[in-house]
Length: 456
Ligand SMILES: *Cc1c(COP(=O)(O)O)cnc(C)c1O
Figure 1: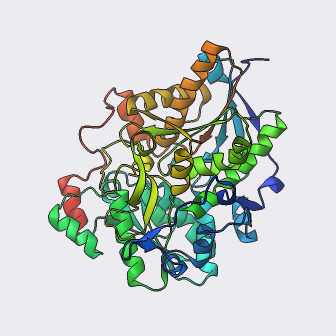
Figure 2 (figure 1 turned 180 degrees about the horizontal axis):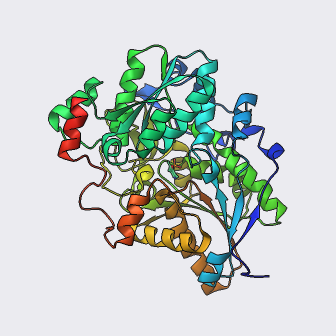
């Protein structure tokens, strides 16, 4: 029966949590360019990677093994919330009067509310196992920081998080979450690094960005031999860990006898899209008619408006140079509420598949995204993260295309996280105050708060 009820749901038993991660690199049309050491202009050495990342992760970064076994303690931690459900948005289909089926992989069941814990658990586990004493990382709105804070607590290793200064003051809930899990959280820019002190000297109200936070994190890694960088989205190993999403999805679709026509995800850096869609890339390369679509914010859309070239991963050029789609490492994303999508570039694997013509991209202004999110919440009950809402906006377009053409397509999107800590943005939208680009940075610290920040 078509369009009956609110939803349908496909669950997998706990034993079906994947036992290995899928590494797409051997299946790509070509091997990705190596990272560049900015000090020498040459490709980085394995030594360089091992000084930057946890040893096992440096190895995964350039591994050519198609399947990598998930260590038992990691798979055990996945049992906290995996396998995640696949849900059909029947009410949304009815509202759109579309012959397409709309399904979503619901990654918001994780304890911290987003997909990010898939990689956080793995990174914390290897850091502890390989004998490092501390991880350091950057976070914007705090999704990654809170996932890693929990993971480090579970695995028993210290964590320092540089949180974009604006969010540190204006969106403190995830900071409280990180601190509850036992992490040390510092605003970026802040006075604990030379780079941070320099930025603050130039502009005491500097709001910070993901890129400044990475630069400061790298300074800490340089200064302490026991410390390694954990990255929430950019690296090949991070995308690898998220492939549990796409592997489960394949099984769930097989159970209902469907294959996807559209795979849609929001992209900040591309970790949720990568984990969700890369396990289907081989089918696509073998001729399956699957469109993989990245949904970006109009205000910061490297895959839609950027170019494919060598650029720095961080604002200061301390980190490696990377070939990918970028708006430029000095691009400062304008104020929008999807903090997780405010980054100038995207993961090199995602950039590469776009460059090879295997990935489509579309960009949407913020007010349209929140309209879509509100429609979705009213029909399906779940309140999406502003990031995930970009995918929902794209899904609605595709479903309406199907109405015009009569195509009974299977549209699947990744519901990367919930929006229950993003209610301030929904409040502004409900009050009619939300703009496509906010005039002031709602995440920028007020004068009083930044003074308080300097004092502490
Ligand atoms: C971080 C985040 C994103 C964007 O990051 P990707 O690396 O592109 O996945 C999307 N959705 C949620 C809920 C996030 O927390």
